[in-house]
Length: 294
Image (cartoon, rainbow, N blue to C red; front, side):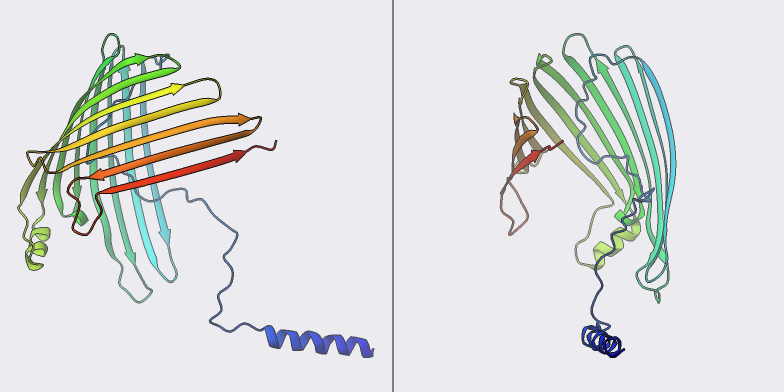
């Protein structure tokens, strides 16, 4: 039995030597649970609407969707979030109307010793109308409202009309342009005004913003294995003409061989009046290689 006691001695010594301290973290768990709900829903948009061309075989439809969800956690930190939303869409011939509404509420405590407090509280709504005219012309308009306690908004109203025209509209090639306008009107809460005044940056109770957008897009399925797409967007502040931005995207996707594909994208973002210390131009280039074995 001498070998047995020798083995126990070696094992005990190894455990003593390798015993981790309380400060040594364990590896991350491999259990990754997909949450049934994030606890929040956004439907109101603060910015431009874009054209939504329907599929060639799109038919009259009426859709209604209601949803509710929640998220709760307990332990070192505590949180409780709840969300509810509804979406409606109706299309009849060349007309389409869609609407959405959502409400979000959350309370949390960063540590077990902190008192739980409200951290999210907002109500949102959105209405959009599309008119698909004869040929390749369409008009659209959207309106959204938002009340958000933690953004300091009693009300944010956005009105966004626009037009869309397809110069080329084929199954293998599309060339189109969009022209849009955004009006944003804010009514700030008294708490937000008091906080801004205390920090030395007073705000107005009411504020309006006007902006314009011009966009041109082009896609081309060169052949069965190569697809090219690009888009150029110009955003202009009104009447503050020094505030404008220019955005360009380009992508090329190709199936090189059986099971092998490559995709390249380039994005350029230019801001004529960035914040102090910020560069005017950002360029992002990415490449993706995919090989499917089976």
